[in-house]
Length: 521
Image 1 (tube, rainbow, N blue to C red):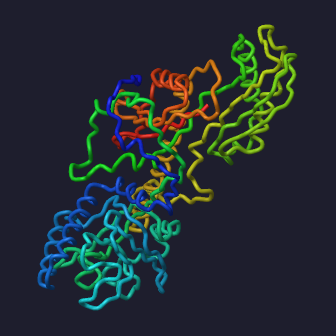
Image 2 (cartoon, helix red, strand yellow):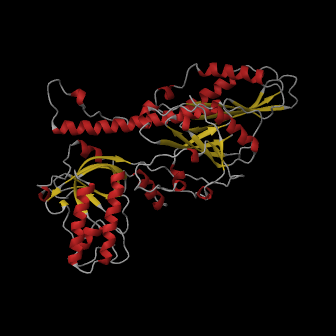
Image 3 (spheres, rainbow, N blue to C red):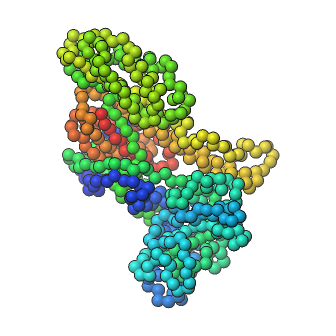
């Protein structure tokens, strides 16, 4: 397996020098969320949005309804070209309306991501009036809505409403208005306009069209939680790692512009790494290895005895890190101790590790130890249990193909249920795989970190790692320099020796996997 070799890159993108302020992506920084959603758009969606925006911009130059009607013909040709099968696959949008009809059917409305200037969901106007929220001049794009009808009587031909008891109806119970989603839908045919839409005034049809849709599947897009992170200017203008200039990543399509990567740095998954794993000492100016290795070996033996039952039973599948700090006198007596945990750690898990550390009968400190006491910190990490993560308790399995008796065909209801179940199961599997891969990557790097001195608690180094296929092309960049060169050198040496694990099969459909490494003592 190939290693990562650092090279020198003389140009530091100025965009990496900006400050990423504390973000609350679900409320405060709407524009950043939109950029993130735009980066998830499939190529057909981007092409559709670009063409629709171009047609909408021509509305400003239209002098009468005849010219506007001509734009509708142009839009029809656009729909025939971009959606020949009237099929939307993995398109990205936001739920703007979700409710129940008088007859008990679910209705749904999704605003397409990427065309968000001035669209209003509920517009009731007369011919010639401007849609609410839409300016007559200077507006290049509106909002595109895909929706079902809201009453069964008006939906007799379209059959867009989602009947109660169906798999999609049950799936929608976990959504609410405002959720960002990926969705699959089938648009309905129309003789003159190619795609059926709700009757609206002329301006609204061009700026804020609403297309009748039969939704087939929805998947919630998980926007990363808010994160406080600042990017500090490195001490020199070089990036560490295999130069990104040596490798040109292929793009999905030439027509789709790249989102500024700096804008999305705060949205990348982050792995917290630590220099000290095993133990940390207040003094290293003595022959500490034999003394500490015996203690550490006995501690690991004790950890194997009577593991905490709540962790084994899966009540805390995310795991966490536990720290036991103590003060040791020269005669081998422990003066005081303190325990601290981060992550999903129960009191039983904390007590289990504390007993493992303190149950060792300590000898006296060796004669070459010249200090009055020794402060020691022991660390233990309860690994995550990916097979128990992301599965809700009491979740019922939807029948799949294997549950159908041999020789019998699946009816429409079971077939739709099986498709949704397959998508949901794959989503859970991808999350589990990603969690496990991040943990493996973390341990690979931490195993190569060798520390022979103490560091301040305020030290920090931020690195962007880009794992590619093949893994030999993986490179990394320093985004935030530490305060001391010794801390930096320790991390660089560890990264040079680390053999990055290859991407699992479930993650190999992506061009590269980017992750932030946040390293602290």
